[in-house]
Image (cartoon, rainbow, N blue to C red; front, side, top):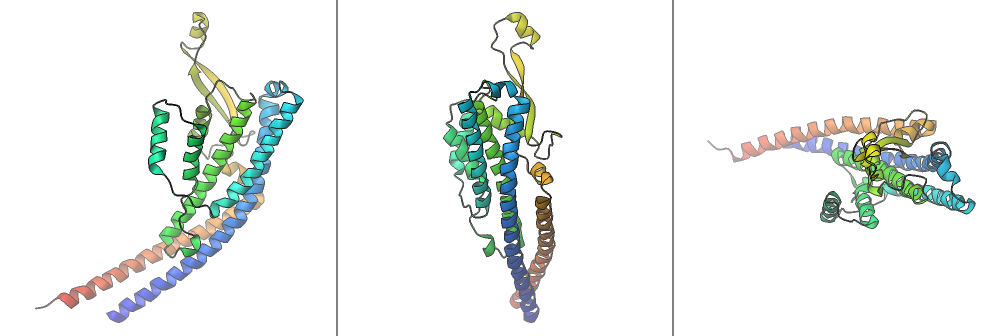
Length: 293
């Protein structure tokens, strides 16, 4: 019995060593992928801004002076450059959530109280990635899968944050409707299905938003549906599937990551099976050692 337990533990140790090797390989693949993604995001972010300003809101863009257009374009490029840093940092970013603070801020938002932009940004920043340990320290396939999920979550949240930041700047320059609160713009992005595609308008969000009608003309109010009116909003929403679709290199790198994840999934099943066999063997041994006639 002792020999069997020892053998099972050796098999578990071998599986854990495989996990360590897969974790290192996966991290390297993510490093390459995020570097490629950062380049694509920069290009797609600028292209989406161009589409919005010239195809969707041309009159609003033309109302800007030459210097204002340059300033807006420089801010767009600055956000694009920052996107490279934020995406590549995901693998190494370590941040503990301040759950109590987050809950309090969300409660204030739901109650309609004033919440500073700094506080709302901090919620998103806290949620980017809770990565308290390096992937190189992982020996359990369950932990490695969780680490992978945190990376994927970090990518999506970073793209959403970049979209929100860019929309806020477009609103500041009066390209996007200024009567819509920033929170409404952000909620529209968060509420959209991440797999949603817009056909000929990649990375653009097209929604109808119902807002309070402040027109005192009763006849007009009735025509627009009583005390509310519908505002059409086209804003920027960077979507990972659409970004990958435009870059064959990214699609190939994503395929390689999926293949590694499939290996980890199979390894996870083997690991759990060996853990159960080991636990059963140890329980049988413990039963025999304490049993007496």
